[in-house]
Each structure stands twice: as C-alpha cells, then as structure tokens.
Length: 250
Image (tube, rainbow, N blue to C red; front, side, top):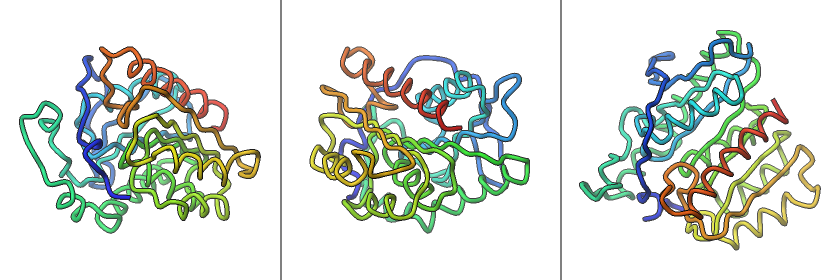
C-alpha cells in the first residue's frame, strides 16, 4: 500500500536534541550515545519520510538511547532527500507518488545495509530496530531476514497485506511489536485484524504484540499533536512500549 495524505500530516515537537549528525560509511546518521552505553548493542531508528533532520525523531532517538543505555542511530536512508518539514505547517507542497518513485528499496536499502555493516565492524553484535511510517516496512524486512534481534514499528506504511506478515511467520525468529491506532489508511483495522490472525494467539513463536490506541491517527508515534490528549497519550505510551519491548529482548 502506497503512502497517503496521512503520511504528510503531523505536528512539530518542542525540545533540544542532544545527539550529533555523523557519517558512517558515507551515510549521514543522527547519533545519540549515553555516557557509558552497553557495549556491542545498537538501536537503529528508521524515520518516516521527513528523514533524520526532523527534530521529533531526533528527540525520540535521544529518549531511546537514554532509557535503554544503548547507542542509537537515526539513519538517513533517504539519501539526503527527505520530504520537507514545511509540509507539516502548510508552507510547502509535494507530489508524494513522485517522491516515492525515487525512494524505493533499490535507492534506500543500500544506505541502511552500509550502516549495519559498519557498526558490525565496530563490534556491534545485536541490533534493535524501530521504524515509523515509511520506516515500518524496513523493520519488517530486517526481521524477515533475521538481521536484527528485535523489531518494533508504529503506524507502519507500505506493507503488503497479507504477504509481508505471512513471510514474517514463515521466515523470522525476531520478536515484533506493532503500535497501531484507530485512524490509519496505511495499517487500517482490517489489516490489523489480519496481522493478529496470522501472528497472534502464540502462532508467531518469537513473540508478537500489537498495541491499539483509540482516538489516535497515523503519525501518532512521531508526529503527534501533543496538545490533544488522546494523541499525546498514544505518543507517550507507544514510546514506552518500545522501550519495554527492547528491554525484554536485547
């Protein structure tokens, strides 16, 4: 399913990121490191279409690194060509189908693989991965290929129903957390139900959990309007769920 208008909506968050933009094997990465991180582990954050310079996702990266005491890497797999955050404030417009044509797996996956291989050479042996919207597909792919030890996604986009979920069941040994919501063109209630039918009730042996946030809309995991109580609740709780899921599996 292609990204829709909901992928272009959201609110900018307040706060001051504490990480740094670095380069790993030519790939730009926003890196947030605790003072004494757990060695040999890394968190990969796969952003939505607004990329690694969106402050919202940088703040999430900082939060995950701090709460898990693991170095976190927000990866520019969009190759320096994200959707402008001015879209969120209505200052700019874009043809999302045209943008997506230049940001398929053949253009984006190589950067992700480069970062993973570089971190492995630096001694990382265990990866956790979380993806938002556009990034959700990549977390599922990494889990299907057993590249990561644990995966999580909030309001994933671009997943094929039921193909991608069935492939998880057949090929993966990676525990998966999905944070879902009431209003979501990309991962709607019917797709949520299919996912539960395939992975739920103990069928997916590595571990499966799906959270559901009524009153929340696609984007709640990283672009929530924090002035709205239901959106804020979904944002805070889903972030905490990711932290606890990772604590249990890495």
